[in-house]
Image (cartoon, rainbow, N blue to C red; front, side, top):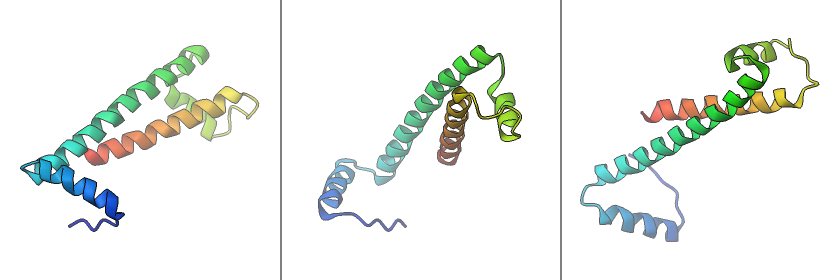
Length: 101
C-alpha cells in the first residue's frame, strides 16, 4: 500500500482523477504507461544526441565512455564532458525505464 504525503489541494485533485476512472488499477497502469512512453522518447532523443558525437569522433559511446572513465582522453575537450554527461543521463533513464517495464 502506498503512503503518500500530499498537500490537501493536490490530494483532492488526485482523488478526483482516480474517481473519474471506474478501475483504480487501470488508472495506475495508465500513469505508469505514460511515464514509460515519456522515458522512451527521452531515450530516443538522447541516443540521437549521442550519435552526433559518435559520428564527429568516429567512436562508439561505449568505447568513448570506457576511455573517458579510464582517463585516457584527458580533460581539455569540452565535448567529452558534455558527451559523458549525456551518456550518464541515458543510463539513468534506461534504469528507470527498466524498473517500470
